[in-house]
Image 1 (cartoon, each protein chain N blue to C red):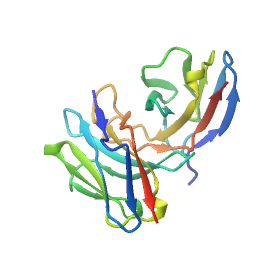
Image 2: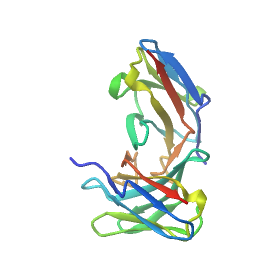
Image 3: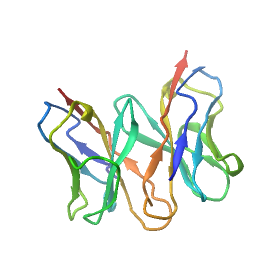
Length: 115
Length: 116
């Protein structure tokens, strides 16, 4: 079956602009999580969406937002970009069950460079 | 809150040598534990996971890991490393309950270099 698809794979923006990243989960997966990966901070959790509702949120400023559609596809948006937002943004999908382990399957990521 | 420590930032081994990557976690109850691997410019690929039961778990690509509750550890091992194993390896913990259910907490990663 198809994996987690993230678009675009690479993008370059300038400070002050905004960006929208897209994630299509594995078919049947209802949870989508987003992580930011940087050399300095490692892998940090941004937020998780389940059935179109944000279920969990990490410690990021309000410039980082997301949403999930009825088909489970998700988007994340970063407004007023800063140089420090340059990172690999990883999306992961899972069944999102409320008990037991959730195995996350990751996409290839979207590499954002802010100039 | 959960946390993961990977003490080794970088490990170098010769091809054919054995490998052990260390991982220590902090969590009050029995955690769900994972090892992921990341090749340059790629996402994370699941190597193996531990939920319960047998403390020695087998994964893909010949990797295995052992859960030791007394040491709060989940070390990754491979008997004979191949050059294609060169990558970055991440250990992660997931809570089995509470408001952070489903969220992964990652270690900082161990970069593996394999000498021919």
